[in-house]
Length: 157
Image 1 (cartoon, rainbow, N blue to C red):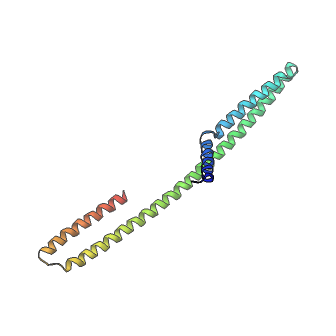
Image 2 (cartoon, rainbow, N blue to C red):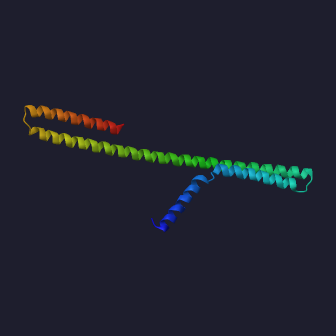
Image 3 (cartoon, one colour):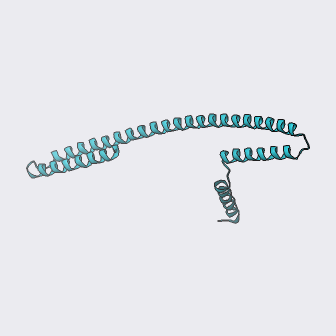
């Protein structure tokens, strides 16, 4: 590997590691923002030179503001959760449809192979000696049909 390729690989690995270990999910961010807002509001209210009544009014305004913001964030989170659930439902449905279609194609192919093999075996058995060869061919045909039936059962399961 060339030096340039090594650097590209290291950068890619570094970004992947950062994404896996250093990412902050939305819940952690929201909690941190709320706590930071409360601490900042409390600090500002307590450090400003105001009368007790003014401080209480400011605290009440801050609490109402924080309550409204929290409700907005909650409503947004509920909306996103519903949206994610709908997307997951659609994707699951699409995947199920693909699996069903692929399964039916595989089953059809196995049946077609069984029919071809059975036909070829029947053609070959007509050419054999009718006494012993027919008995052996019949046994082989039964064994082949049993093997194909077992394969179909395995595919269906």
